[in-house]
Length: 434
Image 1 (cartoon, rainbow, N blue to C red):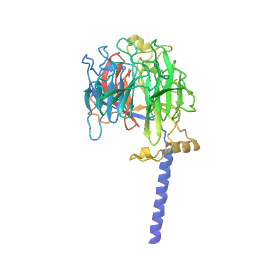
Image 2 (cartoon, one colour):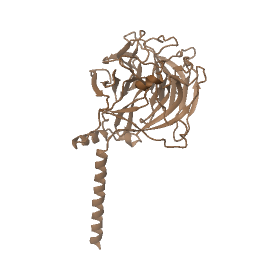
Image 3 (cartoon, helix red, strand yellow):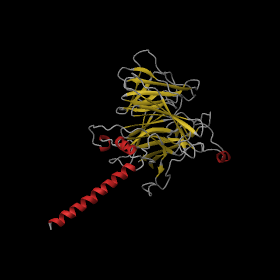
Image 4 (tube, rainbow, N blue to C red):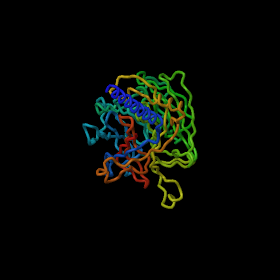
C-alpha cells in the first residue's frame, strides 16, 4: 500500500512540476504588446455658452490623489474659460460614481494674487499641488513672466505663487510648453515664444532652493513630451514614413548631465507605428511589475512642414476622402526599459517586486524578443458593462484635450478637446491599459 501511495505522489509531483514549467515557459514567451484598452465614459456635459463650460480645448487636466483638476482653455463659444478650477472626483471602491465641483480662484493669503484666465498653458500634479506655467490670453498674447509658477493647493483650494529666489537665468515666457514633476522638483520643456517660434530648451526648477537651472537643449521643438523614471522623452516627425524618439536622462542635481539620444522609428505598412501628430497625449504608464510604456494617443494630423491647431478648419468630405484623417482615434504604446528590481515598503505587490527586467533578460537569453524600444497599437476592448454603454463607447477622433495618468499608473483620464468635425467636446473618459 505504501508503494502505491508513493508512486501516486511521485506521479502527481511530475505532473505538477511539468505544468508549472509549462506555465513559466508560457509566461516568459508571452508577448508584452499589444496592450488592451478599455474605455469608460465617466461624465459628459453640453456647452452652456459661458466661460464655465466644460466643452473646451487647449486646457489642462492634472490628477492629484483621486481627483482630476481641469483648468483653463477655450470653450465651444470661442471664449476664454474662466480661471475657476473644475474638480472631478474619480470613481473608486468607496465612491463608485464620480462627483464634481467648481472652485473659484481664491488667493492663499488675503490680498494675494490669483492666475488670470488662459489657454495653451502647461500644468502637472506636484505633490499636493497643481503647478501651472505660462499660456496665452484671449488675444493670443503671452501671459505671466517666464519665471513665475502658479500653485493650486488642492488641500486648501487656494492659489499661491512660486518665484525664483534670485535674478539668475530663467526660462522666457511661452505657451504650449510641458511641465513635469521630477523628484519633487519641476522640469519645463519647449513651447512657443512670443513670435510663435518653437523652443527646444529644458529647465529644472529646484523647489527647495527656488532656482532655475538649464539642462541640455533638445534636438527639436515638439509638443509631444513625457517624463518617465527620470528620463525626458520627446517624439517628433514631419512625414508619414518615419519619426524620431529623443530622450535625455536627468540626473538628480544636474551634475554630469547625459546628452540627448535619438532613436528613429518607421511608420509604414511594413512596420506600423504612430503617424506624426500634435494636440495628442504622450504619457508614461505602467502595467505593474516594473513594465513601463509611453502611451501616444489621439491628436491632430501634422502635415509635412505644417502646424495644426485647435482652431484649424476641418477638411471637407472630399478632402477627407483623399487625405489622411484630420484627427486620430488610435492609441500606441512604446515599451520602455523595465524598472530595476527593488525592495520597498508597500502594500502593492506589483510595486514591491519588479520582475519585468529579470524576465526580459531571460527572454533575450532564450532568443525571444523582449519587445523593448518598439511600438504597438493598443487593441480596443468592448465595454465591460454593455448595459451602461448604451451611448458612446469610444471618445472618437480628437485633439487638444486635457489628460493625465491615474494613481494606478495604468489608467488615463481624457477630457474635452476638438472632434473630427472641429467641435469642442465636453466629456470625460477613463482609458484602462493592460
